[in-house]
Length: 253
Image 1 (tube, rainbow, N blue to C red):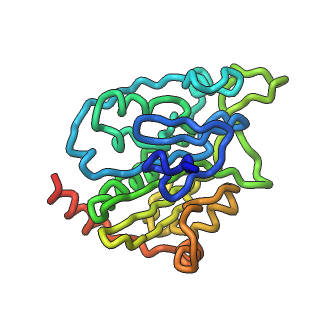
Image 2: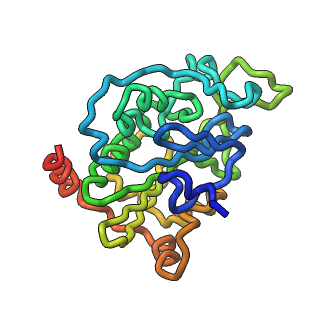
């Protein structure tokens, strides 16, 4: 029997459950009907992708594959004070215009505070793209986190309360990065970052992968098994050298 994760490189090492799986040209989204945003999004970062320069296609639009009742719209974000924050960054998918345009589907968006989206989240995206120059393949999964017991605010004023269809604002976001070298050795880094402005170093947000699994309620990299993998999940990874990764990126240009 063919396992579904085997059909796409992004999900080679696992794919969490979701209400609806959305397969795009170079990334996969696990969509949440309850939250009208991704539960998670996953991709493979290819350093060669950065060598192909295409104009950013700001074509924000609803995803017509999602039932209309559970679909976020542009009006939900309009005037909300929150960015339509990419989970899969536009800069990650620049091989062709259509691949870049696809990152602007609202099923790839989550309400992010502008200072977060344009600050620490962007810094992490850039650091991961540089990291990809040090490894054969770099797998990434990210998504929103909602804290039990904390008040959840919402965006959007064009909704029907009777249907309980709203767009909640996440308290935090996670990103887990799995890197593989030529010998098949694996490195794992995971981050949880509050949805707010931060000038702290990325290292300050490193966490154990199992912490994300507990807070998000989803398994990460579940096709990897064994004691060595369990140890990776149960400890914080050491931050990679951003300068070393940038030097490799410059050499690969």
